[in-house]
Image: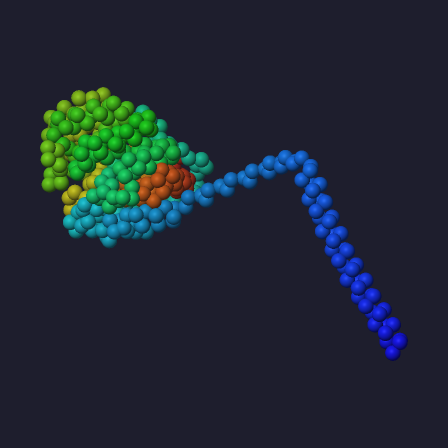
Length: 402
């Protein structure tokens, strides 16, 4: 009993000692913490060294697939942004992006270009090629310009998605980025204020553009020529192929065919180069030159004005055979690839205009989208020139056509 009492007393002493030691240790730790905090508080604050700024992430490179996807989302259903712009899905959709009536003229443009094939030649010394051309005194990095496309609301269906000012800035700005000229449109359904918006963009890009005018009355055309001169544009065109669309003209803005005398009067009214757009026959090509035109555009207006016309690539060689060297020959009609450009140059064009293709670039990617598509066309043109033995875009032989 006495031994048990001693053990219990001893045990209590040990427990009390351990408890006391633990409490003392905890108190010491707490006291040390308090003292450290007080010490730190007493010390003057040390300035924090600025950390090196993290490098800004580079924006992802714009991709053509992304541009076309964005364009499809904005343009649908006015344009489906088909893989090949052949005029099938949009036949008869005018206003819109399609060909008039049955859409045959649009489809003929595509078919006429597609049936042309190129002779591949690799036994030569053409290792570097020159894609530049000079049009109306302007050196272009490639023989491609944007066509005059307009109607942001009634053709493209972009109300609330893209304004006229945004669209023309994208088109002209993208062309400048790629080293070429853009074309600014006039519209039968557009008031003069809209035309002025486009001219403001021409001024912004220091006049590096060509401006079209609908075949309105002489008085209305000359009024617009003066505005174009003020904007400092390189040249102006009358897209006479719009002459039959009187039903869509605004009141007081009649559109009409032009006589030879009327064309002469327009050419004489300015020092700017005058281009007649919408020439599809040899006789009218000659007449345009006789009237003082500095250039012609072989075009059926994208198949949007008269059904059942032949494709541009079908009539271009006949026209070029008679007027090549006497005037600047431009051509349009489903331009998309660099090979399309080379074909048209071999058929007699000095340069080409790309319409719907660059329109999609503008809507889907802004000026960067336009430049991206133009640079892709240029790259394809370079490859096809090397593989046909073509050293310069200014001198393309008909012999490369198979």
